[in-house]
Image (tube, rainbow, N blue to C red; front, side, top):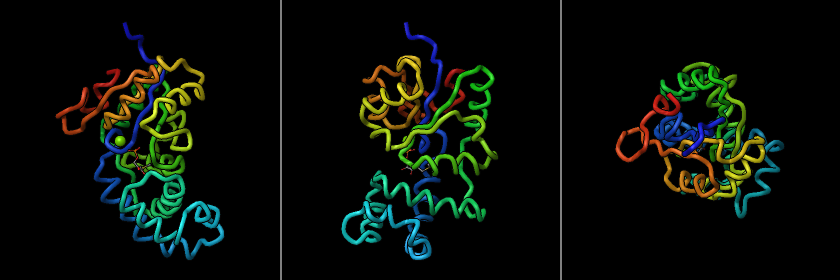
Amino acid sequence: MTQAPRAILLDIEGTTSSIAFVTDVLFPYARTHLRAFVAANAGRVAPILAQVPGDPVETLLRWMDEDRKETPLKALQGMIWAEGYASGALQGHVYPDTPDALHRWQARGIPVRIYSSGSIEAQKLIFGHSVAGDLTPLISGYFDMTTGPKREAGSYAAIAQATGLAVGDMLFVSDIQAEVDAARAAGMQALLIDRDGRTGEVSSLAEVLP
Ligand SMILES: CSCCC(=O)C(=O)COP(=O)(O)O
Ligand SMILES: [Mg+2]
């Protein structure tokens, strides 16, 4: 029998927040502001651009078109979004059941952590400036691709080790089957969420440890 999870690990895009917010709002915002941001912040972005082959800006634009989960791209997107959130141009989308679930799990003493392709800075921004207010006090930790790719079992083992929990005590929720499969291959509990209610094991976080 599967034991009750002692901690929860959540994906963002398609899980806590809508895919449309990421693809139709966040990604275009970063694309539109990339050139001006790089020009205005040459010193700050130099270490990031040094990790990008070829003409860095052209490569970053191509990576954006291909939705590549490259660490330098994710770092730069996070820096550009920071300005958007600070100015009020961006507000992080979360489904209404997301803050409800975070409060419910906190009341039960179940810590919640995030694992997303977005940089840790970008993760803190979407929850810190969300449509439901600042949700960061309800989140115990953040993991991004610097821990490892989301479709590799080793990443989930590394997250469990970093949190000091047995991997089987954690429950991961994601809208991507390959991520759920990787978590299960590591021995983590996992649930596939489909916000459209078609193919997932759940369609809302209200169904996760209700
Ligand atoms: C932190 S919000 C932006 C998410 C992002 O950049 C992305 O590529 C989607 O990542 P996820 O792993 O949450 O599906
Ligand atoms: Mg996702």
